[in-house]
Length: 506
Image 1 (spheres, rainbow, N blue to C red):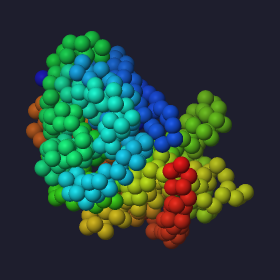
Image 2 (spheres, one colour):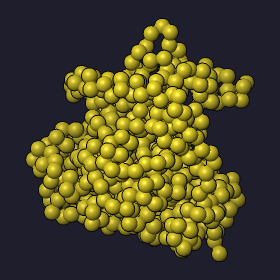
Image 3 (cartoon, rainbow, N blue to C red):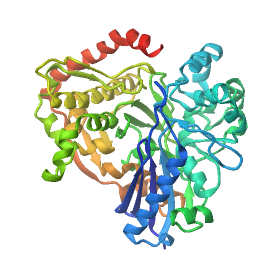
Image 4 (cartoon, one colour):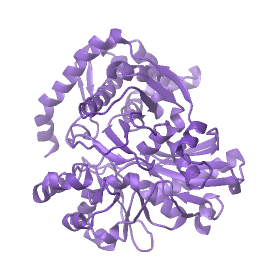
C-alpha cells in the first residue's frame, strides 16, 4: 500500500513541496521562488503561471532527490495564500495577474459597497468586513478596470485551487477559502445567490464548494508529464495556508491556537462555535465542524525578509567564511539589545495593515531613532513590532470571549528562538513549537491522508504526525518594559493614522 503523502504550500514568495511518510516524517522537500510585482503604490500581484512553473520544477527536483517512485504517493494536498482572484477562461488560461492578499487597489470599491449595501448587511452573510485585501473587491476591480478580463472569465480560483485545477482539470472552491468572497454564507458553508446579485458577482464565476479533504480528481496525463507525477494520483481540494498550518501544528480542538510566522504574521484560534468580529477574520477550519478566529498582519516574517534584503550585505559577505547565514547573524545582533530596544518601536504595517485596524494606507514606522541606535536595535524592534501586532489581535479575540492558553508557533519565524521568546514575553503566553518549517505542508498532506483513507480521521492523523520540538515560557521580568512600549505602539498608530491616510489616499 502507498504510504507517502505530498503536501504543497503556495506561499507568497515561493512554493514548498514536501514528501511525508504516513508517520509525518519528512522524506524530502524542494522550494522554488517566484516574484511579487508592485507596478503601482498599493498594488501587489503575481502571475499564477509562475506558481505552476515553480510547482512543476519543485516536484521534479523532489522526486529526483528522494528517488521515490511517484506510484508510491497515496495522495496530494495543496494549501495556499489567501484572497487571490485568479481569473481563468473556458480553456483554463489565466487572463491576468492576480492581486494578492497584500493588494489594496480596490479600496474605493470597498467604500462604495459599504455605502450602497451596508456594512452590517454584508457582515451578516460573510462574517467578515469588506476590505481591499479580500477576493470580492478584486473581482469587481476587474469589472471596472479590466472589462475584457471580466467578460472572458469563466471561473475565479484561489491559489491552491488553481494548482489543483492544473493538476486535475477540475475547478473547485474549498470551504476554508470561501471567506474571501462576501457572497459565501460562512454559517451555512454555501454560496448566497442573493448576495451574489447584490455584489454583481456572476454565479458562473464561482466553482463548486468542496470540503478541504474531499478528493476532487486525479492527476491528468498532461499534468503528469509536466510534473513527473503519475497519472491518477488522488488530489484533495486543500485549503487556506493558515488553516493548514493550524492543522499541521495539531490545532484541532477548541481553544488551541496557532501562531503564524510566515511572510504574514497572525494567529488562528480554533472554535467549535461561530463567532465573528469585524475587527478580526473568521473562516472555516480545514477540519469539518470547526472555525478559526484569526488575526493577521502584513508584516510577520516578511519584515525580516525585507530587512535582510536591504541591510544584510555585510552579513551575507561573511556567510561563506563563518558558515552562519545572514539571518542567524541578524538574530545575534538583536540578542545583544535590551528588551524594549531602548525605546525604539516599530509599526509593521508594510503593505497597509489587516486586522484589527484594517487600514490600507497604514505605513511601517520606526519611532525613537537617535544616534545611539544600531542595526541590532532596528532588527530587535522589528521583531517586537510584529509581536505587538500579534498581541493586539489576541487582545481583541480574548475580549470577544476566546480562550487562549498556549500558542503553537509555525513558519520560518519560529526557527528563531529569540523571536519566539519575544512573542511569548509580549503576549504573556507559553509557546510550543512543532516542526515549524513543515507544519503547513504537513497540514496539506494530512488532508490528503484523511481524504484517501490513509488515516482513519483527523485525530489519528495528528496523533501520528505532530511532534513538539521545544517550549518557551514568558519571562515576567520583561513584562513592564514591553507593556510600556506596547502602549506607545497603540498610540503611535492613533496619532499617525490621519497623516498616513492623507499620504496614502493621494
